[in-house]
Structures are given as C-alpha cells and as structure tokens.
Image 1 (cartoon, helix red, strand yellow):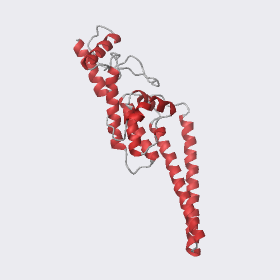
Image 2 (cartoon, helix red, strand yellow; image 1 turned 120 degrees about the vertical axis):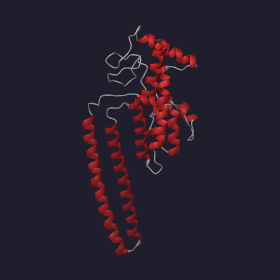
Image 3 (tube, one colour; image 1 turned 180 degrees about the horizontal axis):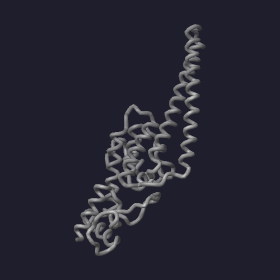
Image 4 (tube, one colour; image 1 turned 45 degrees about the horizontal axis):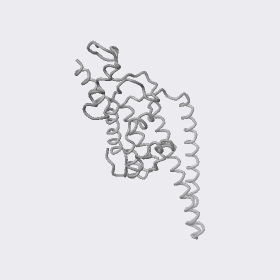
Length: 251
C-alpha cells in the first residue's frame, strides 16, 4: 500500500504539478489542496491508514533515496522550470519590441502558474484600475491621431516649400508619431497582461518554483532589461543566477 500511495503521489506531482500538500505558498488564497491532502470529495481513494504527514514523509524519503536533497516540492519545481523554458521558446518572437516580449514572458509564466494551480481572487481594485488604464489608452489614441494629422500637414508643406527647415519639421513629426505609437502599444500590452492574469498569482511561480537562470538567459538573449522582470530585492536574491547564466543557458 505504501508503494502504491507513493507512486500515485509522484504521478500527480509529475503530470498535474500538484504540490505535496503540506502548506500553501505565499500569495495562494484559493481553496486548493495538494496530492497528500486530497480528501474523498476531491477524488476516489482507497481507505487511508494514516494522515497527511505520514504520506508526505514517506514520499520525501523515497525521493531522497533516489537523489540527495530531492523532495516532492523540488520534483514539482522541475516540472515548472521545464514548462517555462518550453513556453518561452514557443512564445518569444525575435521581431517583437520589449513590451511585447515581456507580455510573452508573462504568458509563459502564466502557463506555469496554471500548471501549478496558483490561483488568486481578482484584486478588489481591479475594475477601477482597468478603467483608469483604458482612459489612458483612449487619451493616447487621441494624441496619436493629432500627431498623425500634424505629420500629414507637415509633409504637404514640405512638398511646397522644399527647404531644409520644413524637412526637419517632417522628421520631428515622424519621431513624435513613432514615440506615441510605442507608448500606445505599451499601454495596450499592459491592459492585456492585467486582464489575462487577474486570477493568476504569477509571483508565486516566478519566485518559488522557477530556476531564475532560465529567466536571466532569456533576458540576455533577447535584450530585455532584467529589471523589467525582477525588482531590486529579487535581483539581489537571484544575483548568483544573474552572474552565472549566459544567453545560451539550458535548464
């Protein structure tokens, strides 16, 4: 029976990325359980002889017999890291700008969070923050529309005047349009990112389940500033990975 229990628990961790079930990760508020704390209402099980602590302890002992330091959580973490690396390869497009690449990273991390069932309740201020963000998007669209009209007018003047001064004005107006287009795209990417992740706790997987060397290598390969992914405290925590991993690192 012990062998069967252990095998089922490992299967759940491997295929479903269920956590061992001892404790919830920080930030997880959803009513979820782990493979060693499943109850009869969650799945059909054979009668148990002992409780959660017994099952978890024999599971970890078996894993440590296979590899020193290996636990159920580490085993699950391996799945999370492999998933992130695979998703980053599939989702990252070379010709994307930085905001779009960050969206791709968050979508890869989201796949991990879904795999590991890192749910959260939508923030109480979510609707209000989305309305504020949409207002910024609408305002930026108006600015862009005005800038495009100014550029069109400047081009018309340049055709008539044909002098250096009007050509400079055209170039200045072009740069203004490009700058506003980039700002608008950044806002729209931000809105998409927030909507997709309103019920997913991305921080739990990023900080506790993923090998940071995968993220560092991805940033170096695609020219994404590491501070766009990790804040100052996180960069200090993962300084070893930042120093160790180059753009060719493979987990």
